[in-house]
Structures are given as structure tokens and as C-alpha cells.
Image (cartoon, rainbow, N blue to C red; front, side, top):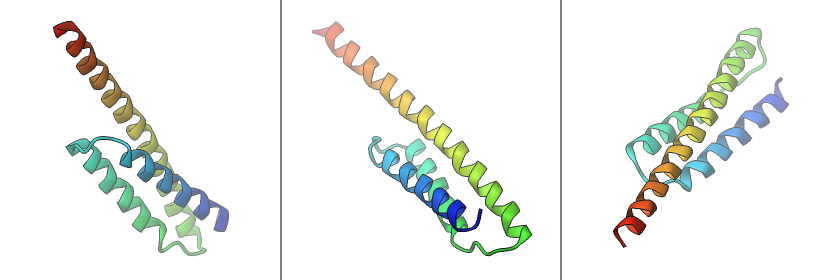
Amino acid sequence: MQKTGLVAVREAIEVLLRRLERLPTSERSEQLRTSVQDCMRGADPWSPSSQADHERGLLMRRVLALHLEVARHERDVAQEGETSVAAIYADG
């Protein structure tokens, strides 16, 4: 999981950053962006060793967990938007 794993993790991180860019600015979005950037920094020093394999596995799990958190945040933002639109039509 040396080169291929590194490429996969970096691409997954890039996807997270693109998804976060599309969301409105909020405290939660900024917290998630900071966590993603931490993962990006964690992917930089990868080297071939058994300890590094363990660290890569942990980082990959962390990136996956962030994908789930971003998906939940996207869903929450969408639901808030639906509520706002519904309120506008109710008032109209």
C-alpha cells in the first residue's frame, strides 16, 4: 500500500476539500476542513516501514471517517435549506 495507498488517500482528501468548498461557511465546516488539512499533513511524511504501514492504515480510516462526517454535514445543511425554503413558502 505504498504508492497506490498514498495516491488513494490524497485523492480522497482532495474530494473532501472539494465537497467542503461547496458547503456554506459555518463553524462545523471549518472544523471539518481543519481535520482534513491535518490528514493532508499526515500523508506527507509516509515512508516504507511496518510502522508506517500501521500509520497509513490509521490515516486511511480517519479519512474514511471524515467522508462520513462530511456526508452527514451535507445532509444537515440540505435539510436546513429545505426548512428555510418551506418557511418562505409558508409565509408567502
